[in-house]
Length: 228
Image (cartoon, rainbow, N blue to C red; front, side, top):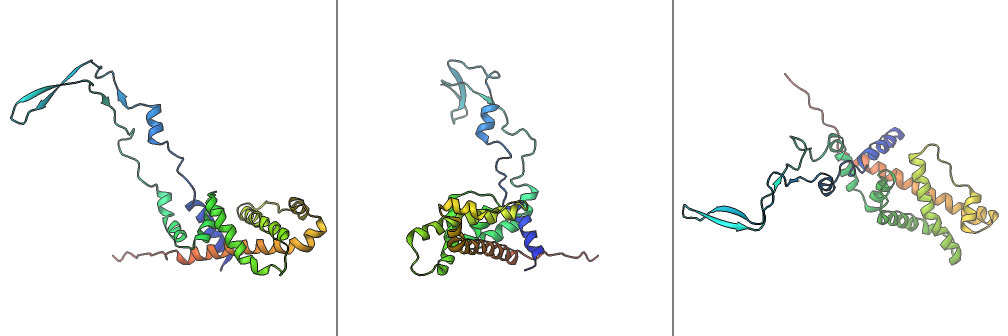
């Protein structure tokens, strides 16, 4: 697919999947800071008499232990805020397209472009990458070596995600990764470096396929001409 379209999808998804839930205070927090009840208007009394209709055209008096409390309007605006702002509404088609993808592709897009650190998403991404990489493992691979390769999966996911969102990101050096795994540099270059490259390629392929799937599922713009 056209690289410009892919980059366009990255930019739009970053805005569409952004978490804007912290822009306003919650109702409970707002009430704690500015209580809406005004006790000065109706001072409390030990016994408060309330007049009620007795159902026969008369009035009956009832003694209430609690006095009336005047409560201010809970919103400070004459018109309530809209349930969704214009930017979030315009990005709704992108979110709908993401929701139609397979779970592992949704997890990748939400983690990479929505900065969603939900552990379930991280697990699904790693499982998808590892399941696709197992066919590249040589027969008779030592269990210890296999565990070390598995530990590289999440590092590969993090590195590719950082590269997509930061052009100045510096990749992990081979010596640093060898130290992380507790092996020599020569062992890293001979045994683990090929798997590291394949894992990163698998994550990059997941990114490309996910973005392409979103673009395919996006509705085509409908421009109606005014015929006067």
